[in-house]
Image (tube, rainbow, N blue to C red):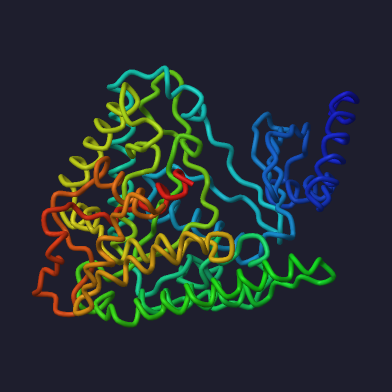
Length: 447
């Protein structure tokens, strides 16, 4: 490595260490490369910094390049191990998806294959409609393929070192991100979605109870107390709704099994061949991938889902077109995937809530849950249903906008205890399902 490169790298790493709270040991990388590949390091170039990681391009003595990721201690070791296991699973069981080959892992250091090509987001706006269609078709094929890799439990993937994979504790952000990482939480695995939802509620309660105002002002103590009360109230209601919806699991056996949810498959995670841009040559971003119920695994990729940010014009038309391409491709491969894709009922609404921060978003979660409770079978609350669509409330405005921009032609507001009953309250029978996947996001956008 040249002297200028050494100087730039050392300065960069010093700044990163100060900013992120963890150090960088170049000698450790050199030893890892020698141990795993029996090659020497020629040059190390920084690529990007994450909130708790550094990504480096490593040039080797044989002229090839690999990627090193140095991950800080804020990220739990189980999250790293699950990321490695997921990439190993994809490489071995679904080789048509070009995931990086993991070359070495030691605690918080990863060495992996460098993906060829260019990131899709850097050229997306220059692509023809044909190229975009081919990319979306391939993404749909991969999502359907993983949809058909079934598991007995819900959580995240791990492996035991002998190429046997199993589902262990969930490593998604709501369970492992930020202050949640070091906490003793029920992270699964779970055999039912009901048990998962109960664990989500307890997670938020535990987090709110762990907050300590310390020597802060009396005003802050009061604010924190109100936040805790709001979390207690919203999670009590969340548990009540889950308890009353006994059909979350056993009454829908087709969609109750579990599969891998490729929720991060987007332009910033896909490498394409610059000479043939419709050809995907690499997929990264396997951190925090989870095994979820089938009804949660089948969804439009966020980057092709029509949204309020582009209500009309070219972007919206293109998103609608590509969403149609995705749907038709999936339907041709597995009708059950499309059935799950259309499952916009109380399960998806509860999952939206389960992924939120009950402390920060209590103002939104509680009215949303109250609206959900108003639609439960046997507890039809016409006033509650009217409040659900009340244009004077945040949740009501979001639900109305969701009806206009995303509404479904069919579906129920809630899952009935009796699966043969298509429960739709009288005032809602002529309306598409307001509990779409984007409802909570719409609420936040409006806020």
